[in-house]
Image (cartoon, rainbow, N blue to C red; front, top):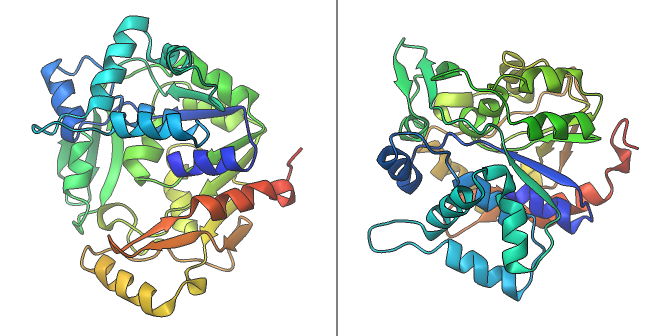
Length: 313
Protein backbone atom coordinates (compact mmCIF):
# COMPACT_ATOMS: atom_id res chain seq x y z
CA UNK A 1 0.00 0.00 0.00
CA UNK A 2 2.73 2.60 0.73
CA UNK A 3 4.08 2.19 -2.83
CA UNK A 4 0.58 2.61 -4.30
CA UNK A 5 -0.01 5.65 -2.06
CA UNK A 6 3.24 7.30 -3.11
CA UNK A 7 2.41 6.63 -6.76
CA UNK A 8 -1.04 8.22 -6.36
CA UNK A 9 0.54 11.27 -4.70
CA UNK A 10 3.08 11.59 -7.53
CA UNK A 11 0.25 11.31 -10.07
CA UNK A 12 -1.53 14.27 -8.46
CA UNK A 13 -4.28 12.54 -6.44
CA UNK A 14 -5.15 14.24 -3.16
CA UNK A 15 -8.14 12.86 -1.27
CA UNK A 16 -6.68 9.41 -0.62
CA UNK A 17 -8.25 7.27 2.11
CA UNK A 18 -5.72 4.60 3.04
CA UNK A 19 -7.46 1.78 4.95
CA UNK A 20 -5.00 -0.36 6.94
CA UNK A 21 -5.18 -3.54 8.96
CA UNK A 22 -4.58 -3.41 12.72
CA UNK A 23 -4.04 -7.13 13.38
CA UNK A 24 -0.27 -7.44 12.87
CA UNK A 25 1.31 -9.64 15.55
CA UNK A 26 4.85 -10.17 14.25
CA UNK A 27 8.20 -8.79 15.37
CA UNK A 28 8.30 -5.68 17.52
CA UNK A 29 4.59 -5.03 16.99
CA UNK A 30 3.77 -8.50 18.28
CA UNK A 31 5.92 -7.99 21.37
CA UNK A 32 4.17 -4.69 22.13
CA UNK A 33 0.72 -6.27 21.73
CA UNK A 34 1.76 -9.22 23.92
CA UNK A 35 2.99 -6.84 26.62
CA UNK A 36 -0.40 -5.13 26.57
CA UNK A 37 -2.31 -8.46 26.68
CA UNK A 38 -3.51 -7.96 23.09
CA UNK A 39 -5.55 -4.89 24.07
CA UNK A 40 -3.89 -2.44 21.66
CA UNK A 41 -4.05 -2.02 17.90
CA UNK A 42 -1.04 -2.69 15.68
CA UNK A 43 0.40 0.63 14.44
CA UNK A 44 3.07 -0.64 12.01
CA UNK A 45 0.97 -0.55 8.82
CA UNK A 46 -0.63 2.68 10.00
CA UNK A 47 2.50 4.79 10.25
CA UNK A 48 4.10 3.41 7.08
CA UNK A 49 0.97 4.33 5.13
CA UNK A 50 0.86 7.74 6.80
CA UNK A 51 4.40 8.54 5.68
CA UNK A 52 3.54 7.48 2.12
CA UNK A 53 0.92 10.25 1.91
CA UNK A 54 3.58 12.90 2.54
CA UNK A 55 5.23 14.39 -0.52
CA UNK A 56 8.99 13.87 -0.78
CA UNK A 57 11.21 16.44 0.88
CA UNK A 58 14.03 16.90 3.38
CA UNK A 59 11.76 17.03 6.44
CA UNK A 60 9.96 13.84 5.40
CA UNK A 61 13.27 12.02 4.91
CA UNK A 62 14.41 13.00 8.41
CA UNK A 63 11.15 11.80 9.96
CA UNK A 64 11.26 8.50 8.07
CA UNK A 65 14.81 7.87 9.29
CA UNK A 66 13.76 8.58 12.87
CA UNK A 67 10.62 6.41 12.70
CA UNK A 68 12.51 3.44 11.22
CA UNK A 69 15.14 3.52 13.98
CA UNK A 70 15.55 0.31 16.00
CA UNK A 71 17.46 0.04 19.25
CA UNK A 72 19.81 -2.83 20.15
CA UNK A 73 16.81 -4.87 21.36
CA UNK A 74 15.03 -4.52 18.01
CA UNK A 75 12.36 -2.12 19.26
CA UNK A 76 11.06 0.17 16.52
CA UNK A 77 10.67 3.85 17.39
CA UNK A 78 7.82 4.33 14.90
CA UNK A 79 5.67 1.72 16.64
CA UNK A 80 6.30 3.21 20.07
CA UNK A 81 5.78 6.79 18.87
CA UNK A 82 2.45 6.12 17.16
CA UNK A 83 1.23 4.00 20.07
CA UNK A 84 1.99 7.00 22.29
CA UNK A 85 0.13 9.29 19.83
CA UNK A 86 -2.91 6.98 19.79
CA UNK A 87 -3.03 7.07 23.61
CA UNK A 88 -2.90 10.87 23.59
CA UNK A 89 -5.78 11.16 21.10
CA UNK A 90 -7.57 8.09 22.50
CA UNK A 91 -8.36 7.22 18.88
CA UNK A 92 -5.91 5.92 16.26
CA UNK A 93 -8.11 7.48 13.55
CA UNK A 94 -7.18 10.96 14.80
CA UNK A 95 -3.42 10.46 14.93
CA UNK A 96 -2.82 11.64 11.35
CA UNK A 97 -4.37 15.04 12.18
CA UNK A 98 -2.16 15.37 15.26
CA UNK A 99 0.87 14.30 13.22
CA UNK A 100 0.15 17.01 10.62
CA UNK A 101 0.09 19.65 13.38
CA UNK A 102 3.31 18.32 14.88
CA UNK A 103 5.24 18.24 11.58
CA UNK A 104 3.54 21.34 10.07
CA UNK A 105 2.84 19.46 6.86
CA UNK A 106 -0.25 18.57 4.84
CA UNK A 107 -0.83 14.92 3.97
CA UNK A 108 -2.51 14.03 0.67
CA UNK A 109 -5.22 12.07 2.43
CA UNK A 110 -6.03 10.09 5.57
CA UNK A 111 -4.93 6.78 7.04
CA UNK A 112 -7.90 4.92 8.49
CA UNK A 113 -7.54 1.84 10.72
CA UNK A 114 -10.04 -0.78 9.54
CA UNK A 115 -11.33 -1.22 13.10
CA UNK A 116 -10.77 0.42 16.47
CA UNK A 117 -11.17 -2.86 18.36
CA UNK A 118 -8.22 -5.23 18.91
CA UNK A 119 -8.50 -8.80 17.61
CA UNK A 120 -6.28 -11.58 16.28
CA UNK A 121 -6.23 -13.01 12.78
CA UNK A 122 -6.92 -16.77 12.78
CA UNK A 123 -6.68 -19.26 9.94
CA UNK A 124 -7.09 -22.91 9.02
CA UNK A 125 -4.87 -24.75 6.52
CA UNK A 126 -5.78 -27.49 4.06
CA UNK A 127 -4.31 -30.12 6.41
CA UNK A 128 -6.82 -29.09 9.09
CA UNK A 129 -4.42 -27.18 11.36
CA UNK A 130 -5.67 -24.02 13.08
CA UNK A 131 -3.52 -21.01 13.95
CA UNK A 132 -4.17 -17.75 15.79
CA UNK A 133 -1.93 -14.74 15.23
CA UNK A 134 -1.00 -12.94 12.02
CA UNK A 135 2.70 -13.71 12.57
CA UNK A 136 1.99 -17.38 11.75
CA UNK A 137 1.22 -16.39 8.14
CA UNK A 138 4.80 -15.20 7.69
CA UNK A 139 6.36 -18.10 9.55
CA UNK A 140 4.53 -20.58 7.28
CA UNK A 141 4.82 -18.62 4.03
CA UNK A 142 6.99 -21.28 2.34
CA UNK A 143 4.72 -24.16 3.32
CA UNK A 144 2.71 -26.11 0.74
CA UNK A 145 -0.06 -26.43 3.34
CA UNK A 146 -2.23 -23.68 1.85
CA UNK A 147 -4.58 -21.53 3.89
CA UNK A 148 -8.17 -22.68 3.55
CA UNK A 149 -9.99 -19.90 5.38
CA UNK A 150 -9.40 -16.99 7.76
CA UNK A 151 -11.44 -15.27 10.48
CA UNK A 152 -10.98 -12.93 13.43
CA UNK A 153 -10.70 -14.16 17.01
CA UNK A 154 -13.79 -12.14 17.87
CA UNK A 155 -16.42 -10.11 16.04
CA UNK A 156 -15.37 -6.47 15.67
CA UNK A 157 -17.18 -3.55 14.07
CA UNK A 158 -15.60 -1.66 11.20
CA UNK A 159 -14.30 1.80 11.98
CA UNK A 160 -17.18 4.17 10.96
CA UNK A 161 -14.60 6.26 9.07
CA UNK A 162 -13.90 3.27 6.80
CA UNK A 163 -17.57 2.90 5.87
CA UNK A 164 -17.79 6.64 5.20
CA UNK A 165 -14.67 6.54 3.01
CA UNK A 166 -16.00 3.60 0.98
CA UNK A 167 -19.36 5.35 0.48
CA UNK A 168 -17.69 8.54 -0.78
CA UNK A 169 -15.00 6.92 -2.93
CA UNK A 170 -14.99 7.28 -6.71
CA UNK A 171 -12.14 4.78 -7.13
CA UNK A 172 -11.36 1.82 -4.84
CA UNK A 173 -7.98 0.12 -5.25
CA UNK A 174 -7.28 -3.26 -3.67
CA UNK A 175 -3.50 -3.13 -3.25
CA UNK A 176 -0.79 -5.79 -3.51
CA UNK A 177 0.37 -7.34 -0.27
CA UNK A 178 -0.09 -10.49 1.75
CA UNK A 179 -3.37 -11.86 0.39
CA UNK A 180 -4.61 -12.82 3.84
CA UNK A 181 -2.54 -10.67 6.22
CA UNK A 182 -2.91 -7.33 4.43
CA UNK A 183 -5.80 -7.61 1.96
CA UNK A 184 -8.62 -10.03 2.83
CA UNK A 185 -8.24 -9.30 6.56
CA UNK A 186 -9.62 -5.81 5.85
CA UNK A 187 -12.92 -7.33 4.69
CA UNK A 188 -13.56 -9.14 7.99
CA UNK A 189 -14.77 -6.38 10.38
CA UNK A 190 -18.56 -6.08 10.41
CA UNK A 191 -19.78 -3.55 7.86
CA UNK A 192 -16.89 -3.54 5.38
CA UNK A 193 -18.30 -6.31 3.17
CA UNK A 194 -21.72 -4.65 2.86
CA UNK A 195 -20.21 -1.22 2.14
CA UNK A 196 -17.93 -2.57 -0.61
CA UNK A 197 -20.69 -4.58 -2.25
CA UNK A 198 -22.99 -1.51 -2.30
CA UNK A 199 -20.32 0.87 -3.60
CA UNK A 200 -20.70 2.26 -7.14
CA UNK A 201 -17.03 3.30 -7.30
CA UNK A 202 -14.67 2.05 -9.99
CA UNK A 203 -12.92 -0.96 -8.43
CA UNK A 204 -9.37 -1.87 -9.36
CA UNK A 205 -7.38 -4.90 -8.23
CA UNK A 206 -3.58 -4.74 -8.36
CA UNK A 207 -2.38 -8.32 -7.97
CA UNK A 208 0.85 -9.36 -6.36
CA UNK A 209 3.68 -9.96 -8.81
CA UNK A 210 4.89 -13.13 -7.11
CA UNK A 211 2.89 -15.76 -5.27
CA UNK A 212 3.33 -16.96 -1.69
CA UNK A 213 3.40 -20.75 -1.26
CA UNK A 214 0.79 -21.01 1.50
CA UNK A 215 -1.50 -18.35 -0.01
CA UNK A 216 -1.67 -18.31 -3.79
CA UNK A 217 0.91 -20.59 -5.41
CA UNK A 218 0.02 -21.44 -9.06
CA UNK A 219 -2.68 -18.72 -9.04
CA UNK A 220 -3.76 -16.71 -12.06
CA UNK A 221 -5.65 -13.44 -11.70
CA UNK A 222 -8.90 -15.42 -11.96
CA UNK A 223 -8.09 -17.60 -8.93
CA UNK A 224 -6.93 -14.43 -7.16
CA UNK A 225 -10.38 -12.86 -7.71
CA UNK A 226 -12.22 -16.02 -6.73
CA UNK A 227 -10.37 -16.17 -3.42
CA UNK A 228 -11.26 -12.54 -2.65
CA UNK A 229 -14.87 -13.16 -3.66
CA UNK A 230 -15.20 -15.85 -1.00
CA UNK A 231 -15.15 -12.98 1.50
CA UNK A 232 -16.63 -10.05 -0.45
CA UNK A 233 -18.40 -10.01 -3.83
CA UNK A 234 -16.51 -7.39 -5.83
CA UNK A 235 -17.02 -7.07 -9.57
CA UNK A 236 -13.71 -5.50 -10.49
CA UNK A 237 -13.74 -3.01 -13.35
CA UNK A 238 -10.04 -3.57 -13.95
CA UNK A 239 -7.25 -5.92 -12.90
CA UNK A 240 -3.76 -4.42 -13.10
CA UNK A 241 -0.80 -6.80 -13.48
CA UNK A 242 2.93 -6.36 -14.01
CA UNK A 243 4.47 -7.39 -17.33
CA UNK A 244 7.69 -9.22 -16.44
CA UNK A 245 8.63 -9.85 -20.07
CA UNK A 246 9.79 -6.23 -20.36
CA UNK A 247 12.45 -6.69 -17.66
CA UNK A 248 16.07 -7.67 -18.32
CA UNK A 249 15.94 -11.43 -19.01
CA UNK A 250 19.26 -12.29 -17.36
CA UNK A 251 18.46 -10.36 -14.17
CA UNK A 252 14.90 -11.68 -14.11
CA UNK A 253 16.06 -15.29 -14.45
CA UNK A 254 18.39 -14.88 -11.50
CA UNK A 255 15.65 -13.41 -9.31
CA UNK A 256 13.05 -16.02 -10.31
CA UNK A 257 15.51 -18.78 -9.29
CA UNK A 258 15.80 -17.13 -5.88
CA UNK A 259 12.01 -17.01 -5.51
CA UNK A 260 11.70 -20.68 -6.46
CA UNK A 261 13.80 -21.57 -3.40
CA UNK A 262 10.89 -20.12 -1.40
CA UNK A 263 8.32 -22.05 -3.48
CA UNK A 264 7.23 -18.75 -5.01
CA UNK A 265 6.21 -18.25 -8.66
CA UNK A 266 4.83 -15.33 -10.72
CA UNK A 267 1.06 -14.80 -10.57
CA UNK A 268 -0.10 -16.03 -13.98
CA UNK A 269 -2.09 -14.05 -16.52
CA UNK A 270 -5.07 -15.70 -18.19
CA UNK A 271 -6.06 -14.08 -21.47
CA UNK A 272 -9.69 -15.20 -21.35
CA UNK A 273 -10.64 -13.90 -17.94
CA UNK A 274 -14.04 -12.39 -17.10
CA UNK A 275 -12.63 -9.04 -15.98
CA UNK A 276 -10.67 -6.56 -18.17
CA UNK A 277 -6.95 -6.97 -17.48
CA UNK A 278 -4.19 -4.47 -18.16
CA UNK A 279 -0.68 -5.98 -18.18
CA UNK A 280 1.70 -3.03 -17.85
CA UNK A 281 5.37 -2.26 -17.36
CA UNK A 282 5.02 -1.81 -13.58
CA UNK A 283 7.83 -3.86 -12.05
CA UNK A 284 11.41 -3.20 -11.09
CA UNK A 285 14.17 -5.59 -9.98
CA UNK A 286 15.82 -5.12 -6.61
CA UNK A 287 19.18 -6.73 -7.45
CA UNK A 288 20.57 -6.39 -3.93
CA UNK A 289 17.78 -8.41 -2.29
CA UNK A 290 16.85 -10.47 -5.39
CA UNK A 291 13.26 -9.23 -5.29
CA UNK A 292 10.74 -8.00 -7.85
CA UNK A 293 8.88 -4.91 -6.69
CA UNK A 294 6.16 -2.66 -8.02
CA UNK A 295 7.79 0.54 -9.26
CA UNK A 296 6.49 3.71 -7.66
CA UNK A 297 7.36 5.74 -10.79
CA UNK A 298 5.74 3.30 -13.22
CA UNK A 299 2.57 3.06 -11.13
CA UNK A 300 2.44 6.87 -10.93
CA UNK A 301 2.64 7.04 -14.72
CA UNK A 302 -0.28 4.60 -15.02
CA UNK A 303 -2.40 6.47 -12.46
CA UNK A 304 -1.71 9.78 -14.22
CA UNK A 305 -3.34 8.46 -17.39
CA UNK A 306 -6.05 6.44 -15.69
CA UNK A 307 -8.81 8.29 -17.54
CA UNK A 308 -8.77 5.19 -19.78
CA UNK A 309 -10.11 3.20 -16.82
CA UNK A 310 -13.78 2.19 -17.18
CA UNK A 311 -16.35 4.43 -15.41
CA UNK A 312 -13.75 7.01 -14.36
CA UNK A 313 -15.26 10.50 -13.90
